[in-house]
Length: 205
Ligand SMILES: [Zn+2]
Image (cartoon, rainbow, N blue to C red; front, side):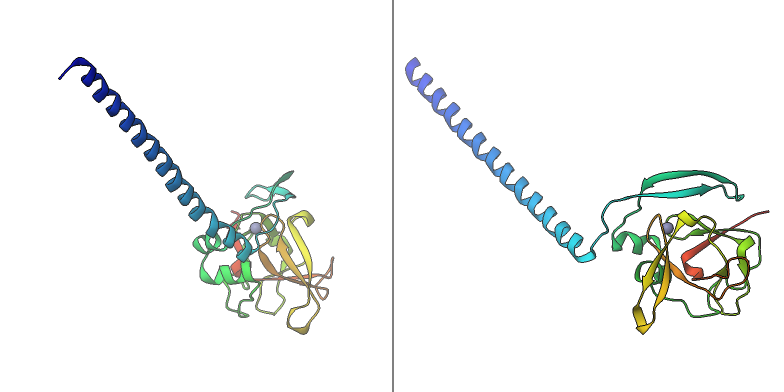
């Protein structure tokens, strides 16, 4: 074999290698594109199906576990998918906080609790009520005459079940907490009728 033939062979090898490399690169791009498409599609569908709320800043008041008012803060609202909430919560707490269900009266763990402490949101830990405002309503649900800070709860007109009521949600994460009625005791005459399952009690010593 002459030297020129060797050169031609070498050139052909280089050319084949380049073509192969180009093919592999485009194949990888195609596979990558497919993976991206497959990853994006269900995500978009999920967003539509669960109708996640718009990202939004909310203002709440922070408290220490001992009940000391710390400061007012503006923060991003806590937004999670249904699956994320399901993983975090018990089935009962999920149904009540994320689907506005109501626990059976006298079934929850806090309706008859008289200990001193704070009630935080089961979903996001936002402080909602102080035991100092808890009273025996006789309803079988934990009842308070005011939230610990007006900013920390949000009241919404609720017309489900053929009634006009005011639903109470957590400002930080939109967890459904219960309803507020105007038949409470002094000094506010309000009755915040809450679900135990929406709350996490933090005892003060
Ligand atoms: Zn919350």
